Image (cartoon, rainbow, N blue to C red; front, side, top):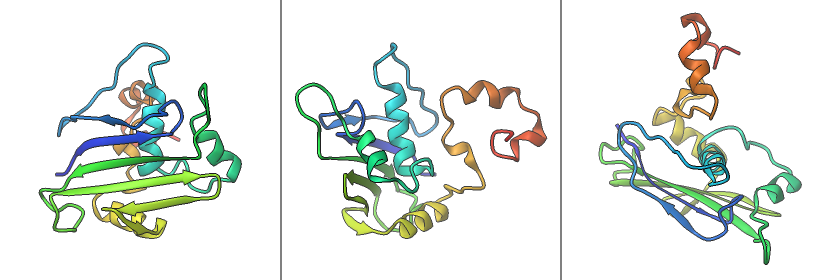
Length: 162
């Protein structure tokens, strides 16, 4: 089974400069840090690329995701996730699979292995690799771990008991 090898973030929320986060374990990963260190923004970046949370965004919503720190605001941002694809889970025949999403005031674009892709193509390849909307547990948001451990079996089938 494939796993995330590296995540690169630039211009997204609190990540102004290009930041590469690696290595990741093929099994489980936990992000820890003090308040204000960027944990929530890191998690938002992963959801931005892989989840449905940022599906149809207005210009204002895209602008709110761009870094606006001291000095100057950035004009575009991207998040790229690099997966281990040694077992060809993404059916590309390559040992790695790169998925990038780039936004700006007037753009919202995806690329797969450096080539432009439509949102429909991205959704199709993610679904075929096992990132199914019917199984929302591949990304577990902050605060949901306790809820997941306490829910009854029948609740788990309805997406976090909702």
